[in-house]
Length: 270
Image (cartoon, rainbow, N blue to C red; front, side, top):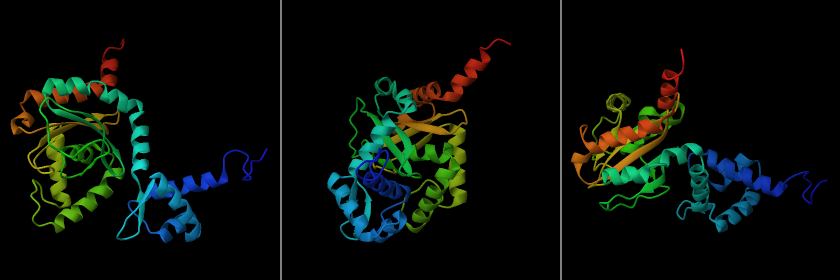
């Protein structure tokens, strides 16, 4: 039986609206009304009606100066809620509170979403950290410890376009204080150093006054599924021989799929 919109199952108008949202999500950034209409194969006037409803619902927002449209805060909340329900996120997050208590530091869990390292879990440490970061914050790929984990262990097809864009931006900012050369060779050297240590650090480069260290939760292909980051104010807490770094590395190793598989293989009968 067909419904009132001529569909055997579902609503044609809703399918059209969701397709518009999907087209927006597939683009790297804000788009004009004409670009959205063209991507969806509909006249701008029709696209505008859908966009107006999405703006009212908070799923889309319109930039005041340019008039371009982008995904809104409600869309971000939906995405974060979906991510938070993934098994690997729940598994990686199980123990964050204990890690925070053990280190006395704020602990973040981040995944790759929205073309960046996005915070999906947060445990505040015993020592308060004055920061505007929170759930949904997207951290820079090259200037944050969390971003550097995805830079080093992330899937190249997802990471390299973002990496190249960030290199171009940083190369134009001559006053930027960096611990690497903003070139492909400089970033490759940064990746090598990070991989050799097994974790990434920054000291006040993303947020002045804060230090951070991050390590990967790896899958069976040794690609990062999530990053665990400890944040504090004392640079001594993120040195290679600190108890905090050892606790971070042990935590991530215990959550990595590759470790579980290796142990199960070694314990299997010959």
